[in-house]
Length: 443
Picture 1: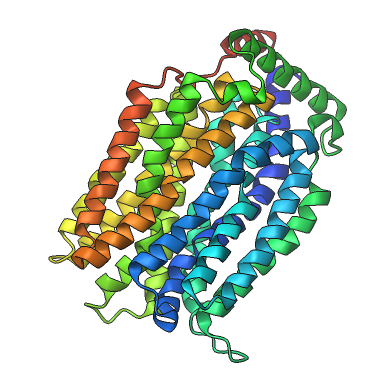
Picture 2: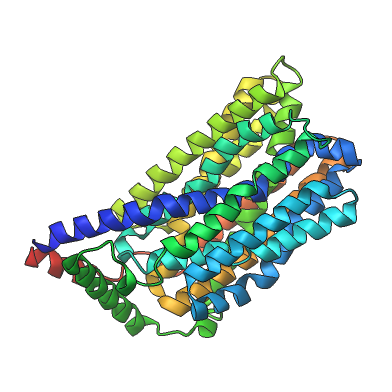
């Protein structure tokens, strides 16, 4: 078998083995993270929570996430991604169930904080794990393959969550069943993960001898090439200039992203009150919006890989999202349909930037250093997930409208796009062009 055919068959097997499973795991984590937005449609009234209380509780998740993100990733590099991912999923499932029984703001804050602590380092583990099984040139498609779980979880979760809100079983309200039922899959997948994943290429039994040898050889060569440019340890990577700048850029992006995602059900409910659309129907509309975001993620990831370019793809997506977000709020009083159209465009832009953005760190860092960089970027960035929802809730309570909040979120995304384009030196392009040319010649 020639080198090109060997590359194709190996990459296909890796993709079929890993991406669908990691997609499911990540989808459940996202569902348990953001279903609070749908629970709020009932929970806030039942428990007497204001928008500010809800925004703070939704956002405090990310404080717990921030505190344990880097330490958790450091532990992962020692014990292996397989065991750590399994531990994370089972732990967060238990806490997600406890969310169903909160009664006071302090209980709400505590449960959300602990959920963040439990889930911390989950995403860096996924990116780090995949980067060990793929060539750099395939990173964006691989990352997009499981990261479509973010809009995918919302696409499925929107109609599912609005359906569960109608449940009234065993004396528990719909929002309580929402938390309980959507946590169960995490326990199941957490146990399966321990036996299904392999810690490294050498351990796999689903590749033949030639495929395994080729994958080990090509990934090892890429690691050596990157180390010639920057040979960092886990902790040294945390001080890298571009890693720190990417962290700030991601922080600004997540302010806008989570500000809109956490309040999207509430914003949509406000729009649909002017129509005869039911809560369940609204769930299907939101699901369709997230399906559009899924398609956008795949298309952007593929185009980014094809052009071997990352920064401008990120900036184009975030700028589009920011502009659409502001327009959506401006046309809300004149056309509900147009408002939803621009909200959909805003979601597509916010999600589309993910795969090219997360292809940048593994392009110039390897192994433990890449894990440390991804953990820092994700932890600092996700602090924006605390500020975004809290500020949106505060502005809504103060002004009685989401218009000013949407402008604030849009500005945050514009700042993020500028940081990535003008301050980050790393392009995210593959460092292995010479290796790829050699493979092409040998084939």
